[in-house]
View 1: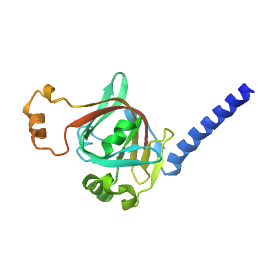
View 2 (view 1 turned 135 degrees about the vertical axis):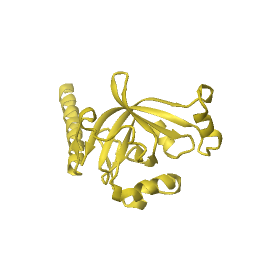
View 3 (view 1 turned 120 degrees about the vertical axis):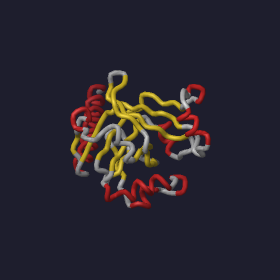
Length: 195
């Protein structure tokens, strides 16, 4: 009897994973390895602004980000993002195990503008823009209109500590920054898809 239950459970897990993977394909995405297929300049990629999304199937939020890093850490392919303490997305980042970073076509720059100037506290930004939310096999939200989706599992999260600022750059940044000090989120890249 126990073997039947285990077999049934494993079959349902495998089906859920294959259905979710198919959902990305169904939405026009192809999976790729970022180590081999990431073609953008890592030094410019975040300056061009991307979208950060976190949450679950019950509730999620996204925001435009212009700071980040791409590379390796602790033997893993890693992506680092920063979220200020007063941003609505921060609570989602703190509660979620995974997050996604999304890119959009230049023609969809209204998405990045809107997501960067409106707060999710005031309403569902994705719904206001007509975006369609989908989920990875891990339950991480993303929007099907994105041209690329990178899913990360958070390995480290902590706020900056001003006592460790070594130059005037961060001191000046936070002297009059109303959103508060940023937290750093380092994620292992676990999946990536692009159209």
